Length: 173
Image (cartoon, rainbow, N blue to C red; front, top):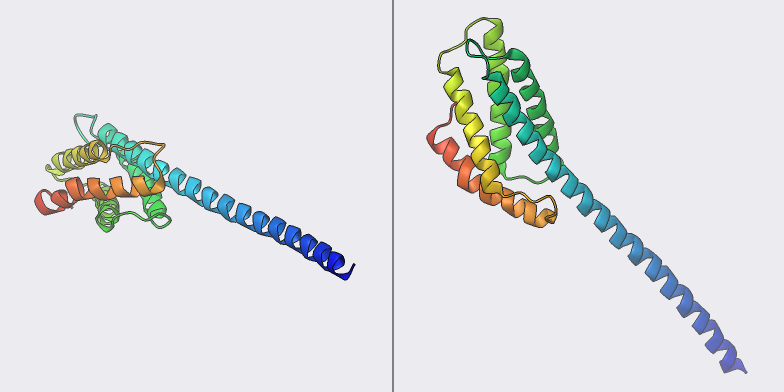
């Protein structure tokens, strides 16, 4: 009789332990999945911002006489959003350097417009930046359904293929 009570008590304790472990493990895996989904969302947002940045820079060059300051300002804002995103996700250092250098370049360009000190080579420099972003996006081969690890690997590969040669060869910054 005593053994039956001990067996029943240990059986109940084991069931409670299994339920608690299942609950905590389920929560743990749910948290990991949520973190993974958030990281995927941030990578997607970064790529979407790069596309918007490229479009804004291209639109800034549409006018034949001078560069559109409003489009350049919008490009500056989108680039700033990417700088903030790069603090939340792990991107290659050279890509972060490219974004921060581009931000400084755009900011200085807008300041030059205030002083009306626009250089003739600015259009070519902006076109070089647009071409670099375009080449980077092609090298990235971004898929919205990749895992964060695959996305990170693609970012690193595209950065090595495009951004590092950009800084070595034709850095207009």
